[in-house]
Length: 152
Image (spheres, rainbow, N blue to C red):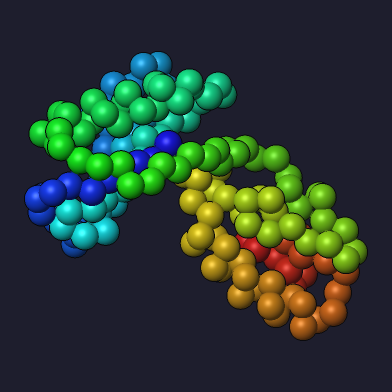
């Protein structure tokens, strides 16, 4: 879950991102916080964990509140909230592809299971996909270990 917050004073360094802050309570999982400032008084605080089970929304929100409090950020407005789940799996998504249908992005298994990152892999695979499409081959051949669609 993430909160986009706005403060009255300029407290963020908008040239610096806190990517994976593991200083938060782990509670039996791997948990971390992202801090992505978009200006000197606006930032996204995103609470992330690796778990088979989702938490109650109130647990995510309490973790963000605690994190903000520990940073000394007590006066802020929540501008927007976001929530979502990224499948962290080694499931062979490409087996769902058919001659004329090709799943891309998370649905196509382009999310890196160890990190949850999708954009970087999608950028790389999209370039290869364009070349593959020019070859006019069966789409189920894309992403195989051999051939023009190989992603290795």
